Image (cartoon, rainbow, N blue to C red; front, side, top):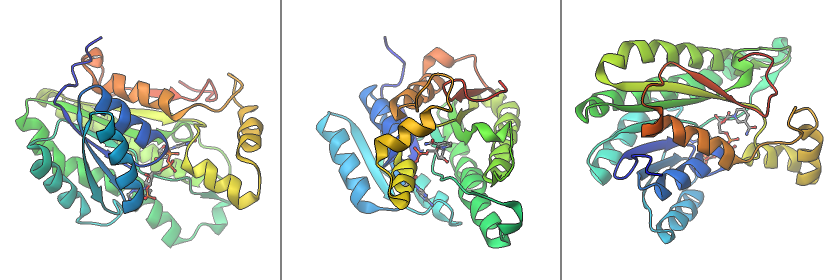
Length: 257
Ligand SMILES: NC(=O)c1ccc[n+]([C@@H]2O[C@H](COP(=O)([O-])OP(=O)(O)OC[C@H]3O[C@@H](n4cnc5c(N)ncnc54)[C@H](OP(=O)(O)O)[C@@H]3O)[C@@H](O)[C@H]2O)c1
């Protein structure tokens, strides 16, 4: 099935591990030209080599998206490499949760910088170029906690709720430009952050996944490719009448839609 992605240029932040990597690989396989962004150059090189070996087009940008100014450079590099921008996927992020009284101002600020301001800045820089192409897609990757915040889930749930509000507001503001904006809310998906957590706890990775998978109605942790499939759908021609929506990718874990 042709998803209409051939030749489209997609920026994917956090494109070297987990959901971002799987999405970059999937979009490249569908014919998109992908710009992957992360801080670590060795992983950028490894993921790019894999995409090129499979016949895909990829450009890497080593950047910390939480830093002001980097969005401008990411967009400039995408334009230089591929001549335009059609799709932005704001995916870079990591879990940040703690007891409320233990979360310092700097931890709050760091979470907003990484999960909200990075997306604000990248979208603001990219929109004029997406508009020039006659429209495009933006997907914000957030967390099911955005809609259902629990105890000891801040700052993540608050920054993710802001991301959800931004998604809806952008969808209204840019619908006249044919720029469709949606979000996905992730539950538990196999990815780098779980590998780090399991290693820090000295627990075997599969044991860690089996334990946390018991909390999921479908009985397991999701695969990054399963999240990438939904994101690919949202940026494809198949989702041409979908904007301002949010899809849970969580095996049924969330109590809310
Ligand atoms: N996996 C889950 O269970 C889960 C659950 C809820 C929400 N999510 C959300 O889904 C998204 C993807 O998560 P994941 O688990 O697939 O991620 P992951 O495997 O931990 O990978 C994170 C990616 O983001 C990049 N990154 C992190 N901080 C960055 C920064 N400041 N600037 C640029 N790149 C940065 C990392 O590369 P570098 O370290 O080299 O920069 C890496 O490519 C995140 O926003 C995460 O919060 C995931």
